[in-house]
Amino acid sequence: MTTVMVLGGDGFCGWPTSLYLSNLGYDVVIVDNLSRRKIDVELEVQSLTPICSLSVRLAAWEEITGKRIRYEKLTLGEDYYEFAELLKEVEPDTIVHFAEQRAAPYSMKSPREKRYTIRNNLNATHDVLCALVDTGVDAHLVHLGTMGVYGYGTAGMKVPEGYLPITVHTESGPKSLEILYPANPGSIYHMTKTQDQLLFFYYNKNDQVRITDLHQGIVWGTQTAETALDERLINRFDYDGDYGTVLNRFLMQAVLGYPLTVHGTGRQTRAFIHIRDTVRCISLAIANPPKRGDRVNIFNQTTETHRLIDLAKMISEMSGTPYQLVDNPRNEAAENDLRVSNSRFLDLGLEPTRLQDALLVEVQDVARKYIDRCDPAKIPCNSVWRGAGTMGARAWSGAETRAAEAIGDTAAPRLRSVA
Ligand code: USQ
Image (tube, rainbow, N blue to C red; front, side, top):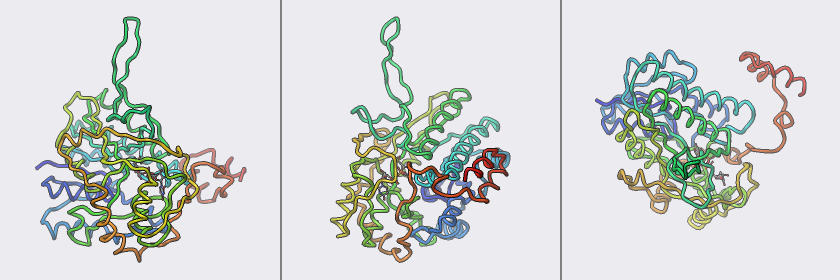
């Protein structure tokens, strides 16, 4: 049986992917440290949908399908030797890597979250690559990246799938090359994904690690065929100002009658994909691995682009809930055009879930059903990209000082005296 290790298999994309792959007949091993659940506790918020503990989820899956998914609790980027041992024991054919802090607003909250996001994401990615080389396990690494590595504007052409063809002028005449599309991150979180690209480039060049990097758009929707089988398998739905992504937030706000929170002008254009298509894309990437020696394989994992204001108007008309233009907490272009090449997945057979077809289902089956679990106080996005320095915004706490000292951060006492 083909074995797939899913790093971050308890999260919003990781959980439905694990079930989808298990259902397809893959032997799935989840590695997760449950950090996403801990962040819920820290932010005093919960998924709109009532998600069960991972052990209940896994027992329910086995009870319903007869398929067993193994789970190992490890922190990628910290528990290096345990992870390398596990890799040697399991010898997966594929590793799917979701084990990163994925919210841009959370990554911009304060130095604490910025530093956590950098530490967690970069060390996790590097440890996986390093362990693959260290153990000699020849697994294909499939990584969930983001459309945000490109920024969201172009010189007018479609954003290519990872590589930009360019012409340089040499002494012997023009020469054609393909280079990684220039990185243009808009948050600390997005920056970690651009750094991941360089780690992939290096390990692919130096050690011939086989890698696929998926540049995914904003995911919307909640359920896949597998997570909908039983309420104990339900996927998470984030609506809060840090983790809720824009379309799911609008859908939930529409049901609540809370004016839809459009940031700035709303003329920002973004790329979208339904969670059902995410899991299909991952399985297509697994089934089509690069050969040893091939360069990093890059797909744009997205199916539609929309202006936020158009989405807000569409949902507003559908629901009768008005939209509001709120001050944009982010530092992003007030408007942009975005056209994206995504033919690689379409050529492999992806049939996209269209927004028009699935929006109402999402409202009926998820948002309306669980709206009583929503805490409206958690809706506003309080994470600001610019403005008062953190030291001006809040005092350097004793707990942070102790945490900083524990990791040998010598700047901490100086900062404390400024406060
Ligand atoms: N926005 C609003 N109103 C809201 C929330 C967001 O107008 O209530 C706006 C934002 O200002 C931004 C856009 O909607 O212009 C997208 O924000 P988002 O929170 O939906 O998405 P983002 O922060 O870009 O991050 C999400 C995922 C991330 C993934 C990324 C794909 O959290 O993991 O990598 O989407 S992409 O955006 O294509 O880079």
